Length: 312
Ligand SMILES: C=C(O[C@@H]1C=C(C(=O)O)C=C[C@H]1O)C(=O)O
Image (spheres, helix red, strand yellow):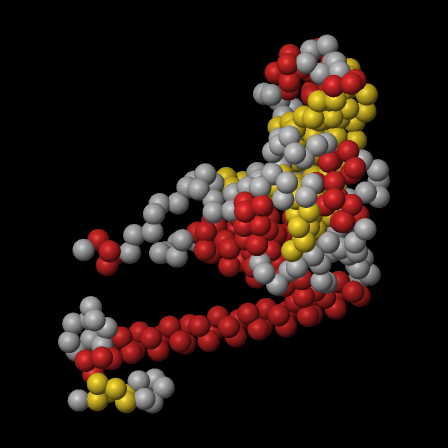
């Protein structure tokens, strides 16, 4: 007996049936594949419709005189990503869902206003590339730099590009954030991943920098560039419980350049951090706000995907 496939090609029934499907399941399989085709066509149509809404959004932004720089809106993106992971259920791994939406959002941001992503590869190329591609996809151009200061300079000289620099202490990076101190310099606008978890496939913590955001900035955590003299182990210990701090010691001055991340509206403010530094014997030469980002949002690690069929 022959059977007719979706494409109209005739082939033997035995070959058409899956090798694991019991005899007689062919029709069900074809029906399920028809369902999958219907869902795929629906999802594609929805993406096309999303693009039409983005077109209208661009018009509204233009009519409101939005600046011509990056269309990236950190507060909106952080909130969307939280909602997506919170409502997810079913067998599709969360990593996949998050990755799909990062590509959707980043690419629609790109079609609104083209931008490139500049990334500092000095602390390791593979992890940083994975991070950039996971969060921004493959349509947004990727520009590699060997050092964070090159990333800051590229963003400063661009119209609306984004930069990715490590959000962890790494000897190779230097105190790149001091280049963000002047008012018109780029600022930290986000910390990625938006949703953190121990087993994140692109979990390298990075700061995203861009021209100062005038619309849609998020200020849950402020990032301060501090210059201190008298930087000692005691001063470092005093700060550890108060704020997340990146420190680059400046041996010639017995001081350090610090990048302190301080949640707004919490018990510990900038004043608390400065007071702790002074109490430890350090003196604070300057403090400049160099950006802000959404508070870190943590999700528990995901269980291994276990399809019912795999359980035997
Ligand atoms: C759509 C907007 O622009 C960008 C694209 C987004 C998207 O595609 O969902 C979300 C936030 C912005 O980074 C917006 O400002 O809402």
